[in-house]
Length: 130
Image (cartoon, rainbow, N blue to C red; front, side, top):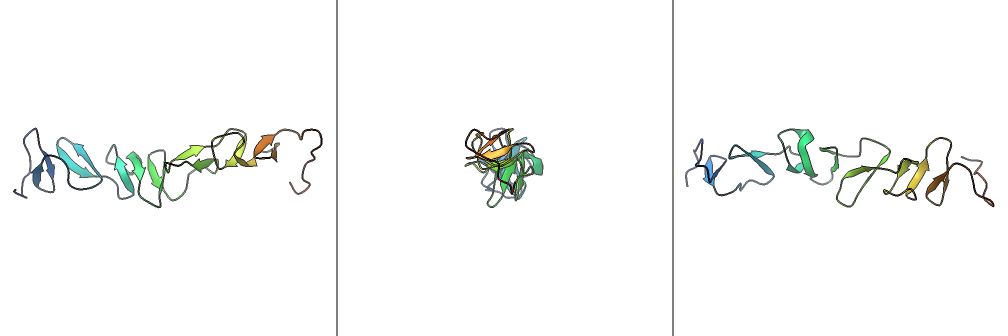
């Protein structure tokens, strides 16, 4: 096994100077039969840039292809796969995808048992504290 290759036959990939059946280096992408490392924050990628992550290393979360410490939008939550997803449109912050997963509401709405309502139902009154 030589470690000074610069190209390989069609059925092999070039990984750190060696022609192999598959990439031995973790977290790589194969382009033109060459193993190329993903961005350091990625745990999988589909391109060469930091915006091409498909999975992230801990403690990062995936937001639109980037591995970041927290979601770009305050109107997002992190799902069980470590991906940032948008809240229901009625929420200004949330802990899940449903309209009943709201933590805070958009202006003009009130939080009632995790849901945002435009006015309180009979028997309920707005909190004077907000």
